[in-house]
Length: 437
Ligand code: GDP
Ligand code: GDP
Image 1 (cartoon, rainbow, N blue to C red):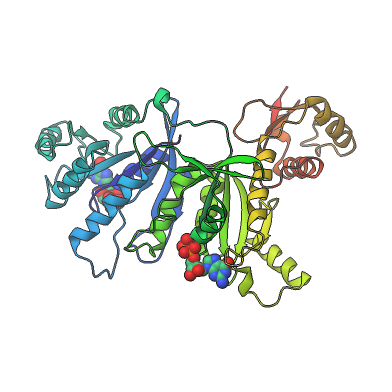
Image 2: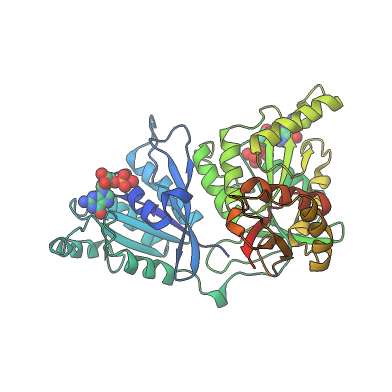
C-alpha cells in the first residue's frame, strides 16, 4: 500500500521549503482552498527506490473561533489519521516552544511513527542547539537545513525506515478496489449506504494491522471487490468536516489505495474547484475514473440535449482526458446506482487490458504507413514496431522509432486516440512512449 508522510509544524519553521526539497515543486499539486492562510500541497518523493506521498498539512484557519489548542488538535489529528509517518518540523533558532511540546504530546499519545526534524541548522555550530529537542520525547532529533539540503539524506533514510515493511504490508489480494471520492455533500455516504444497505453483501472487514481497516469487501453481480473507505464517509466526524481542505486530504489515502475512483459530483452544482482538486489527485496517481453525477432526481430538464450538454461540460473541465464514463444517478431514488458499480468494474477490466503484440501491429503498422509522423528537419521518421509492456500499473505501450526525439506530442496523441478507438480503454489512463529501436 501507498505510504503517506504528513509534515506538521508551526508557521515559518520551513515546512514548505522542506516539502519542495522532498518533492520538487514541479510535481506538486496545490490545494488552494478558502479558509486557510495559504495553499496546501501534495506531491511525490522517491528515496532509495521507494516512492511515497508527502502532504504539507499545517494549514492555519483564518477567522476561526477555535482556540489555539483545538486548532493544533485538529491538524495533528488529521495528520495522525491520514498518514503513515508524521514529520514534525521545528526551528532550531526558536528552541522548544509550547506548540512543539503539545504536538509532541499528541503524537506520543497516538503512538504515531514520528520523525523530528530540527530545521534551519545551516552551519555546524548550530547543531548543538538541536540537542534541546530531545526533551520532546520523540527520539533523536534530525538536524536539517531545508534550504541548503544539509541532513536531508539522513532524514529520508529515517522516514523510509519507519514505513511498514513489505512483508507485513496489507496487500490483500488482487480484487478490484474502488474509492468513492468527491466534495462534502456530493452524496458519497448516501450511495455507499444505498449499495451496502441494499442487502447483506458485505463479506468481511479486513482488520487493519497498524491502522484502521479501510477496505470493505463487497459482493454484487457475482463479482467480488473492495470499497475503499474515505475516512469520514461511513463514520461522519463531528467537527469541521465541512472544511473543504480537510476533505481533500481525506481523499488522498483512499485514492492512493484504489484502482478505480468514483468521482461523485453534485448535479445541482456542477464541477467546482474542489472537484478539480480531487480529480487531479486521481490523475496524478494514475487511477481509473468513473464520473458519477449524483442527485439527478433534482434536475428538472433531462432531455437528450440537456444530458449531452451536461456531459460535454464535464469533459471540457477535465480535458485533455476525455475518454471516461459519466453516469447520471440518484443515491436517493437509487436510480442507476448499480450501473455505477458495474461501470467501475468495467473500467477496472479496461485498466487490466492486455493487447497482444500481433494485434497491435496489425492495426498500427498500416495506419502509420499511411499517416507517418511528419518529417522533421528533413529527416524521415520510421516507426517499425509496437508492443504493450507487461506488469505495469496502467496499460503502457512502446512504439519503436529510428528517431524518437522527432516524434512530437500531436502525433503521440493521434496514436493514443486510435488506440482508444480500437480497444476499450474507457476510464483508464494509458501511457504511450516512443523509443529508439
Ligand atoms: P512554513 O511556513 O513552515 O512552510 O515555512 P517556509 O518553508 O515558508 O519557510 C519560512 C522561512 O524560513 C522562509 O523565509 C524560508 O526561506 C526560511 N527557511 C526555510 N528553511 C530554512 C533553512 O533551512 N535555513 C534557513 N536559514 N532558513 C530557512
Ligand atoms: P457526502 O458528504 O458526500 O457523504 O454526502 P451525503 O451522502 O451525506 O449527502 C449529502 C446530502 O445530500 C444529504 O442530505 C443527502 O440526503 C443528500 N443526497 C445525497 N444523494 C442524493 C440524491 O441522489 N438526491 C437528492 N435529492 N439528495 C441526495
